Image (cartoon, rainbow over all chains, first blue to last red; front, top):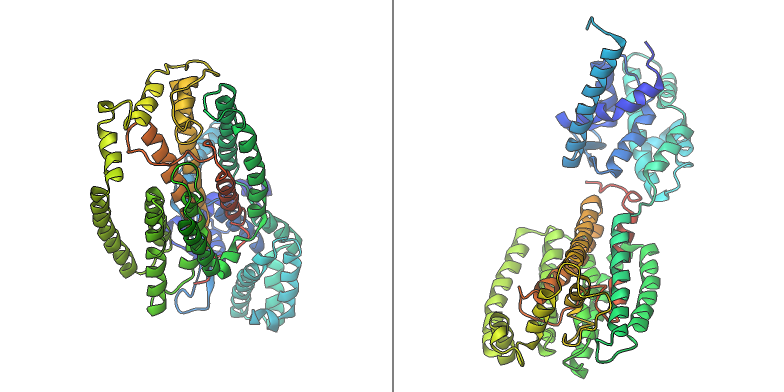
Length: 111
Length: 425
């Protein structure tokens, strides 16, 4: 199913930050993880991930560093910052609230 | 980069993206990051058995419209303004102008008359200086730090030799702030080892202090040491340097106490501070008048243009008690809050900036402002011994120009925070 762009836009940040909360990652890793864990529902235009990452960094929620990882070539990794973790918690509660409210209104009973 | 050169399609795609990113300095890193991603995609496609040309084409296509990516990336790499810092500094400058007007208009200052015009003049010059500092590239410090330090040291030496008058406003007291950018430039981007570094470290630590002491600029000497320590810690050197600084600090503190003990007028400052009311007409005069002015203020002050004739140096060190006396305790608390907010905002800039030179530079500036602001407020309230420290922006002085330029510099560092590449480690 193709999810509308508008719906995707609002949730990308929370997806990225949740992944980075577990461990630092580089861009390609993040996209692969999101596709995998969402069961293929979320599939990105790969390039559009980077403006989001760079904006998150500009706002201080993540920080980047170049690293060789497991002896591979140098990649640009991102890790979440303390400010980022607080932001993530806030967005997670916001999402929980949003989700419950929508479910209530549309009367979803079978989940 | 060589991957790019081997594959013109990748290069073309990256060109398409970077056309939209105005910040040229960010290009190299963006290209490296995106090329890396394309390479990973290509390798995944090759693993599925696709021929190379097709794998590459699929990878590039999967990246999305280069114009769209480029436009969005541009948004992430634009100059930033720290409005709260700018606002707080502006508020303090305006407060200072008001204060000078009030002091002149009520004839409270024995010189009467021109404090306001002079302060306005300094503020205008300061504004021009701040604008220059704002648009300049602070990274020039990397190259010019040593000459700048040398120049400031020479200026300090000249001032000490020619001897400024003991009272009144002295350029010697303004020099610590001048040392801040030089120290920041000297301590960042440096391998902390070798004889050269030790020589530099000890030289910069030790050189100015005897000059300050010879000029009887005792507060400036302490200020320099605080500044040095702050910049040193922010530069994250090897532990041996921090330990050495700690040792020198302990040694100097010991010597400092001995020096104060042996110097009558310095010892007097401390005993006056503790026993001001014992001699309110003579040695305790300044502190007693300051406390009286503050205590008699009431919540809303004695009136906005009340003459305050008993406060010495009312336009300078004791401007805060003057303001509290005329505007009240509530206003006094608000001014204190504004001053603290200004300092806190400088620290916020330190947190948000990634460039090590930028961070160290703003730490140095913040250290000087924090020390002067807090000390002035505390001493006028009787909580610290009185020294010749004014309240930045609010007290009268040509030093206004330097303070404003320092804020311009801090704003300049914040402005570039998203325009610089991440440290490649």
